Image (cartoon, rainbow over all chains, first blue to last red):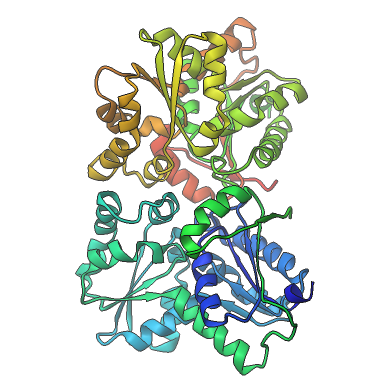
Length: 267
Length: 267
C-alpha cells in the first residue's frame, strides 16, 4: 500500500476531526490521508488527562503502524493533554489543533480580549490561556465550556430554535466580557458557526481551528518537501474503533462529502 | 469487608444508574450497595452491541471480585445487549432495567399503545418491542431515540426553554401515535420527567424503569432471603473508571443526596 505509507495521519475521538480533514484535503488535494476516529472511546472531552493520554498513544500507534509521515491530533482535548507526550515519543512531526487556533486569534484581536469555547476537558485544562499568553501576555482570555454543542452537531441540529437558545445561554457571559475574537476550540463547533456568530454578534471574529490547523499542515508538508512521492491517485481512508455505519452517516455532515467505506479496527 | 461481600452490585456506563440506586436504597434501606460507573467508556448508547457486551462483562467481573450477591445492570443499553450473556456466565442473579419497565407499562396501558424513549443503542436494539410483545402481543409499540436528553440531564438543564423545546421536538411524533403510556427507557430520563410529561400531555402515564427495577430487586432480595446477614450499618460505595470528582458533582443530582467518597478503579 504505497499511498498509505506516505499519508498524513489524523486522529480524533470521533467524527469531529473530519472538519480538520476537510480543510487539509482542500489545501493539499494531492496528499493521501488516513483518518482514525476512536469511536469506541468517544467522547474524550469529559475524561481525565491520564485517560486521554492513554487513548491518544493508542491512536498514534495505530496510525504509525500504517506508515504515516505526519500526525495531526485533530481533537482539542487530546491536543491539550497529550501533544507534548506524543512529540516526545514519536519520530514523525506532530501537529495539534490548539496552537494554530490560538495564534490565529492573537493575530486577529484588536482589543486583546479573546473568548475560547470548548469541551469541559479543553476548558478545564486551561491550555488555550496558556498558549495564548505565551504568544502575547497582554491578552485577556475568557473561556466557557459548551457541553451541549457536540451532541447538537452530531444530531444535526445546527440551526433553528434549540441551538440558537443553547448558544445564547452559553455565550451571554462571554459577550459581557466584550471579547472581539472567539476561538471555536472544538472540532465539532464549525457546524454551529451560524448560531454561535448570531449569539456573539457581528463585532466578534470567529476563529475556526480546523482552518488554522490545515494552514500549519500545508506549510509543514510543502516546506519540508514532505509531499507525496508515490504515483497513483491520492486516497482518503477512514478507520474507526466502533460503529462504522454511524460514523459514515454522521460524518458526512462534518466532511461535506460522502465518506465511502469505513474500516473497523480493534485496538 | 463483610458489608461489601454481601452487597447488591449495580453498574451503569456513568451517573444515570444512580436513579436506580436511589430507588433501590429507598426500598431496601438495610442493604449495602456497591455502584460502578464506567465513566472511562461512557456513553454506551452510541456504541455497537459487541463493544457494549465487552464493557458489561468487564464491569460485572469488577463487581463480582468484590463479592456481591446480586447484580443490577442499571443501564438500558447494557441490559439490551448484554443481559443474556451475563445471566449465562454468572453465578449470581442478574436484574436488568428493561423487563421491569416493560412489564409495568403493559400493566398500565388501557389502549394498548405504548411509547418508548431511549438512547440510539436501546431503540436500535428493538429490545423493548420484543419484551413487550412477549408479554402481550396485541400491544403496539412506538419508539423514539432522544440523544440530547442525556447531555441535558448531565448539564443540569432539566427545566426551562431548552429542554422543553427539545422534548417537544422529539416527542411530537409519539403524540401523533396516541400512546397512553410512555416508558422512560434510559436511566437519565427521570430527571427530565417534568418536560417530558408536559410534551406528551396529562393523558399519558410515564413509566420510570428505575422504580420498576427497584421493585423487582426488592422482591428478589426479600423473597429469596438474600437480606444482608452481616452486622454493622449498611454502606453505599461508589467506584468509577475515570474522573471521580466529576462523577461526585454530577451524580448528586441523580442520587438526590451527597455521594461522598468515590473510588477510582482501573479495568
